[in-house]
Length: 119
Image 1: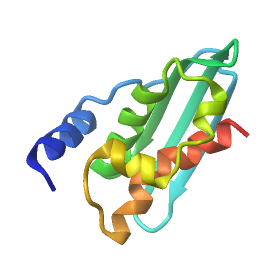
Image 2: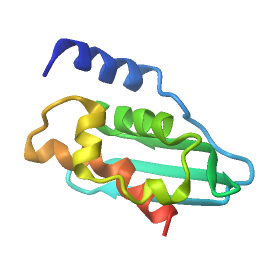
Image 3: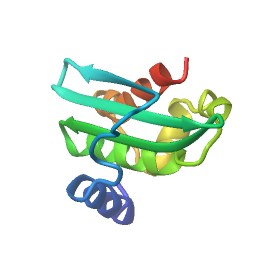
């Protein structure tokens, strides 16, 4: 793993962005990875079809929690239809790290939850 990206992952894990709750979200959902125990809950507030606010709560490994922090930063202000295009390849590029098969599920957990919010 590239040391700069490793530092970014650790920083987002230690000081996650958009961590918390939204008082009156448009929608909220959760996702879990039973293999390693990662859990995440994401709440979203849309205004005029754009992400006005997004927050997450969760627990788990550094990859799952940092991924949620990085993803929520990215989607702020985005249009709902654009979020539907986000996929595994996008998420791996966004994180900037190579992941083994066991860690891919950790990295994709927040994206899985986000997709539940936009259907």
